[in-house]
Length: 251
Picture 1 (cartoon, rainbow, N blue to C red):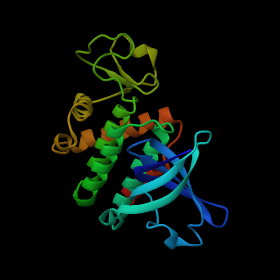
Picture 2 (spheres, rainbow, N blue to C red):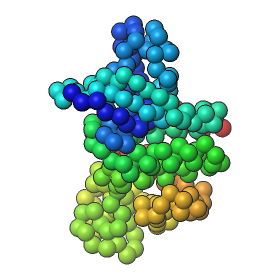
Picture 3 (cartoon, helix red, strand yellow):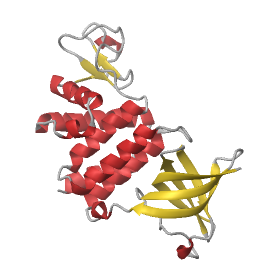
Picture 4 (tube, rainbow, N blue to C red):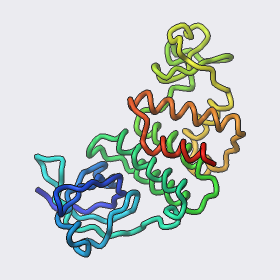
């Protein structure tokens, strides 16, 4: 059993027994880990953080070799992203980011790019007036970095370049050319502008993606495609996405 230190974002936390909690972290150094914090519920001052979801913390923990649950002995808050928490929509999007990382990433599968993407997205979410665009960029880049990105540069079935009409297949994970469209009768049409938008975000950095214009028609289809793609491959709809959908309907 070794003692380790890590920068970590809180994915979620849950109570255990009457005194302790278990927290799922995404760390820069080790990927996703689960940590037990003993006594924090009865003695909150024992730790220098209340470990709110999507907060950034420095943690020290005993990393066990024969268990996926490690003992966290210290947690110091570095950034609570307070300005995000002043908005219900932004808070929901931040929780969605953490829930997506938790759903896509395997335990202790280190990926510094994903950690940096999450941190950058949270910092942008604090000050940016277009949180929905940040959410879309995060989803596209998260799918790409985690190996789940949709196949858009050629036909997912035959590999040929698509020059004209195409359809998007959720089950096959990409575009189908006219010849291969019968392979998925549930595939759906997709605007060429939506395809170009996804590929632009995949290939460019966060700032360049933020500067990309999206007309309302493409933005609407992008949301539908991304959410359907995630629901299909995760086998569920993320709880935070359901709440975000309700918020959008209420506006």
